[in-house]
Image (cartoon, rainbow over all chains, first blue to last red; front, side):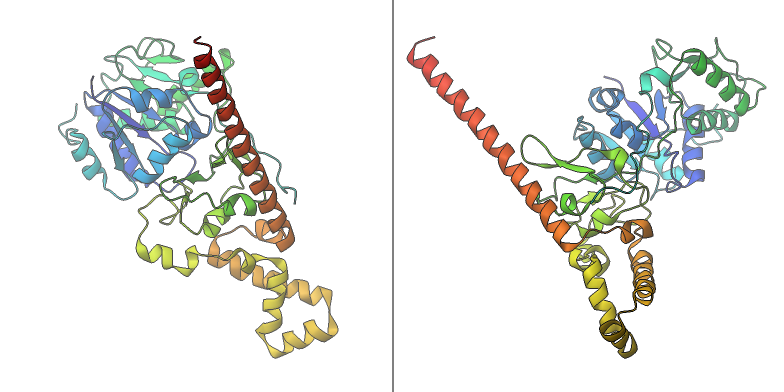
Length: 112
Length: 284
C-alpha cells in the first residue's frame, strides 16, 4: 500500500507554531506527495470521525501533528488504534525543515 | 455538585461531508506560497483538504474543475467553498473548541480520581469497569484540573501549553513535581479555609474570632487566585469546587457503578459458560 501523509492544522489553538505548520503545508502543496490535511485531529477524535479509521488502518501513514503520545491516544480515544509502524512528526518541537526532511519532501526552492 | 456550564456544541460534521479535493493540476500556475495560503485558509475555515487518487469522489468541492485557484485570493476560494457547503446544508464547522482530556492507558491505573474530581461529568466507567472520557463536549475549555489530580500523569490535554500534560514524554521529575501532584484535599473549600487561618496571625484572629464572612470571602478569593496562577485552573472552576463530602460521595458512587458492571459482566460470562456446558452436555 502507498505511503500517505495526514497533516493536522490544529486550528483551534496556537500551540503549534503558525510558521511551522504553514511552511509544512507549502512544501506539501509544492510536492507530488498525496496528502490529507485536516483542521483539527482533536475535533475528529471527539466526533469519532470515521475518517480516522482510514488514516489509522490504510497503509503506511505519516501523521504531521503534535506530540506522538497525544496523537496515539487521540486515535485510541476515537476507537481506532494507530499501527505501530505509523510515524508521527511533531510540529510543536521540530522545525519545518526537520519535519519536511523526515517526510522526504523537496525543499521550498526546488518544489514546483 | 451540578456542572456550572451547559454542554457546549459538539464536534462538527465528519471529514467526508466537508472535504475539498485538489484535482491533478488543480494548483497549476500557483506558486508554493500561494498553494500553502489557499490550503491554510481552507483549513482555518474548517474544511479538510485531500490530494490523492479518487479524492474528488464525494468531495464538497474540487479545486480545479469546480473552483479555480489561479489569480484568486485565498478568501475568495474559501467563500466559494462555504457557498457550496451552505447549498449542501452541511453543518458549519468550528462551533466547538475541542478541549477535552485524553487518557494514556499505558499509565492509567483506573484509580478514578479524575472521575471523582471532575465537576462536569466528563468521565464515566465503561462496560469493563474502566475509566473513560465519555462527554468531551462538557469539559471546561482551558481547565486541566483533572490532569493535576491524576497521580500517574495519565491525563493529557493535547492543546495544553506545557508538558507532560500536552502529551510530551513523562519524565521522572514530572512525577515528583509538586505542580503535577495536587492533593485533592488541598483544593477543597474547607481546607482552603483552614489554610487561610494559618496564613497570618491577623487572619487567624479574624477567622477564629470575628467570623467576618465578607473578609473570609476576600481571603478565599485571594487564595484561589494563587491556585489559579499556580495550576492554570480557571477561577470559575476553583470557585465551584465540590466539598470533601461531595468528592467522597462521587467516588463511592463510581466504585459502586464499577463493581456493579464487573458483577454483571461476570454473571453474563458465567451464563455463557453454563450455556456452553449445557450445549456440550446435550451434544448440540
